[in-house]
Image (cartoon, rainbow, N blue to C red):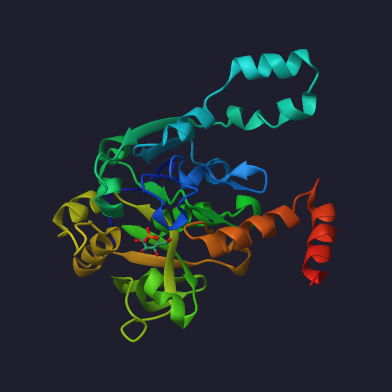
Length: 303
Ligand code: G1P
C-alpha cells in the first residue's frame, strides 16, 4: 500500500543514533564515543555528517548517551583555537576546521537507557514531526571518504515510490548474516527490490537472503507507531528491524536499495573492520597516502 502523506521533494532531516556503548571496541571506547575514533584524519562521525550534507540533509539530530559530549564539541566552533592558529599563520590547519561551517543545524538528545536501536529512533519523534526522515548509523561510513550518494537515492526512491520505508542493503558473505538485519527480497527493478519481510541477526540456516541492512534508511513517521508496538527482545532491546517487519505485515510499501559496489559500507563496530577501514582510508589520503603505502609495504616485507 502506498503511503499517501509524503509528496515532499527531498528528505532534509536525519536521525543519527550514536548512543551505543561500543563495547566491542573496549578499551578504546571506555571514555570516548566509538563514533569519535579517527579513521585516517577525521573522526568517523564527521564523515557521516559530511556525507549527509552532501546528500541534501540540513537538519541532524544526534541521539546520544552518556560519554558522548565530545561529538557535540566536535561540531561546535572553537573561536579560541581559530585565533591561535590565525595568529601563528597556520592557514593549512585553519582549513582543517572548515567543516565547522557545514551547512546544517545540529541537534542533540539523549537516549537515557540503552533499550535498542528502535527505542533510540523513537527519541527523534518530535524532531521528525510529520515529515519523512533519514536514519544514518553513526558508526558506519558509506563509500570511500564517505562520498556516497546513496542517501539521495534513498530519498528519491522514497518519494517516487511513495514508500513507507526504504532501506540500504549490501550483500554479505553467508557466515556474516548473523551480524545483521537481513531482508527477504521480493520483486524489483534495477537497483531496488520490494521487501517481503525482515529478520534481525538470523543464523545462516534461517536467513532469507544475504542482503544485509546497511546503516542508512528513509522512513515515513509511521515507523514511530510501529516501534511502539514492538516487544523488547531477550536482551530487553526494541529492534528497529522488528518495527520495519510490522510495516511489511501491515502491507506498507517497504523497499530495499541495493548499494552499488562503490558505496561499500565501512562498519566501525569491531576491531578487524575498524583496522581495515583505517588502513584503506590512510592509503587513499592525498597528502600522506603515498608515503604510508611505502612504509606499509616495508612493514609487510619484514619477517
Ligand atoms: C544494527 C541493526 C541491524 C543492521 C546493523 C548494521 O545492528 O539492528 O539490522 O544490519 O545495525 O550495522 P547493530 O550493529 O547495532 O547490532
